[in-house]
Length: 405
Image (cartoon, rainbow, N blue to C red):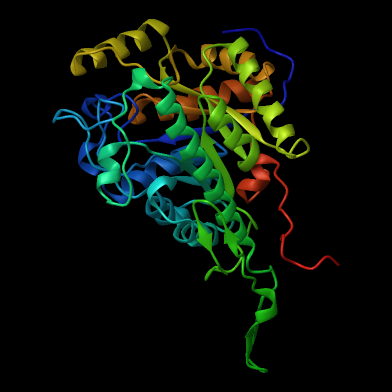
């Protein structure tokens, strides 16, 4: 056990939920519940456990194609989890069963309409009483585009990410995502907070002067508005995005409240934070609070050798060594706490942990890591707010269309 530390700034902590866990063989572990993956009860149990650990929020992974062992195209494997539920609908189902934890579903912006997303996430904010968020994700996969038949992409390989044609596609997708977020945010603001009167005596339900056309005209979208859903309880649900390189860093800096990044070490983390802060200033948001969370895949056990052995055993089941865009951590909750505090000192304000095996590693986070961080004065001992914005220290934004008083 490491020695007590002076109290650092509190860490924000989230967990990314995906299937049976982030390792492809996670569903074969004794603690996994493969027959329950498509049930509401399974997801409710996971989120309830995360809330037991006082986590800020959970994210729900989603995609527009089946999971695959290949980054850019489908595979033919039948020994790994395939098939998933819609992330927004999962979040809406578990929302009434929880009370404090934030719920952040993934939405693929490339093939969906911002109007639909705005009202879906606004509805989630109502259902959860102010705990909704959104993780925007782009896709340039050919087979996903083929589901919709509206656009095409060149065949991409992960080793071609630095090729000029791939950089051009990537830049356009993230430019589109930035417009997407702008439309969604304007639609959330298209109703003023007091637009609904609901006065049965006078027969006035809504003040039409407080509903606004957003009249967005851009390269990718033309949206008149207003929304059909009144302004969400948080005003603006929390917007987040995963970012690996400079182009998505600029999306985070210009449009998001949280960016998830994948540093290899503390030095790398500091460099990423510096780049995002510079881009934030260039976007005119230097004074805005934008969180930068480090992503890690975690395999946690009381003995570090046991964690490493568990990962090796899982790798044996898949036939290859598991790798990820994020750092893969094996060790004890105490060792993970050491790493998180080191990376926090490099400028990260929080972490999104990806449990290797949800049935094992989620409880290791909530019942091992969280108490260790609490012991060091680095994590809350009770929820201090009822909204996701409140938990993250984000102010409730003013409505851009409301007349200044």
